[in-house]
Image 1 (tube, rainbow, N blue to C red):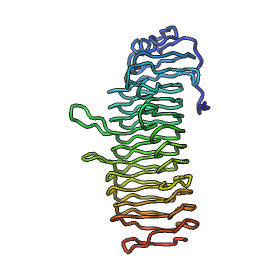
Image 2: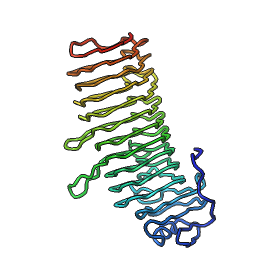
Image 3: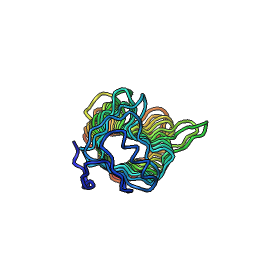
Image 4: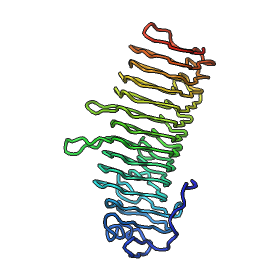
Length: 352
């Protein structure tokens, strides 16, 4: 169980809202307290352990607070339903909640076509699919959460940032921040940037995802550009720590720490499928088969960092690819340092 980074609100024995209404601590009264409060108000949930039979739908401007681990909301909703869903709302805040999913249901929290929402200091576990699903979300913050055992129904993302398509219209997810989350041992990928621009992952720790740590992927006609992973830590992924694919371009990976387990074909940072102009700054990559592997992708810049104890090679390439090694980069202690190719450039001190 996590230790929450901030003190929760004053403990209350009943559900209450900022309009002064009080309710018995049973599942059906949560939505009632929300609806009675109206927009731009607050709802406090006490220590309670309830199973929900319908999705909780906040209103714009609402703040919904629990008391930390003691406010336990279990997903007993229909197939593919979340516990909370922010849809066509703005400025919603969810905090100090313990959300428990079901192997046969969907997500923990959905943020769909909403803006400036915030989820923080929550424990989200056992979701059938995503822990937090952000589709068509803009300028939202997801920070200081603990997400574990996601994807029990389908291979999924602990936090998924993607577009939402309705009536043939695509609504992108742009300018979101994922900050200081702890993501541990689920089925699938830790963080996914599946289209969208200017989204940032910072200071997140992703431990033992069943496939990849962080994914940047671009689909036809939908951009995945100018996104970044900065100061993230990814530990013991079974395949790739960071995967950039599908033509995702102009993305940045900086000051990250990646630790593998020397599994065959594992990669610290894997760039493929014509993904262009990736900037990798000061990575620390240890114990993979390949530290960085570039496949049919061009104009990658690797600037500084330390890559070691990689079985095959520190920096590898295949197909039509090129990269530039800049400044001080240490490739000591790998099976081989880097591929030698006339298309590649080395500028500065590369220690091999």
